[in-house]
Length: 178
Image 1 (tube, rainbow, N blue to C red):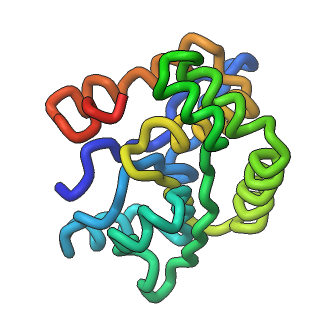
Image 2 (image 1 turned 135 degrees about the vertical axis):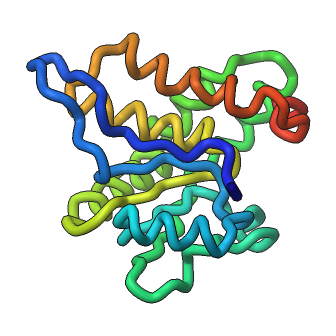
């Protein structure tokens, strides 16, 4: 009830004919509006780790409701766009793909991606929920990387990303961001 873009990365067919497993990764938007019932459902689903990719400004405005729960490890690993690149984007001098590439290729971005994968590799029990504010950009990058590593074809990775537009089409706050 408290999110509009929470979904499992399980069920995607890989290039070797297998499928990605359910209950390993959940991608999501902000968890600050989760209800008590939502939290119970997520715990029952097997959430043991939460990776919050929002920056300090975002987390100070709305704390992750899963961050202080017993039995759940919480990590705040911000993925942030380079200020210069973001300014170029807002002025129409580059597109969203340029922002995504800068998030992954700049020195700080490479370190952040490495940190994310070190956390993922170290958490071998339960489901990992990862999120940002809308579950679109930063969450989409990590989803793309995970599905790509599993051998999911490009069309399905794009489809997974594109689902967000149906889920947020009525959310005026998200629409005004881009």
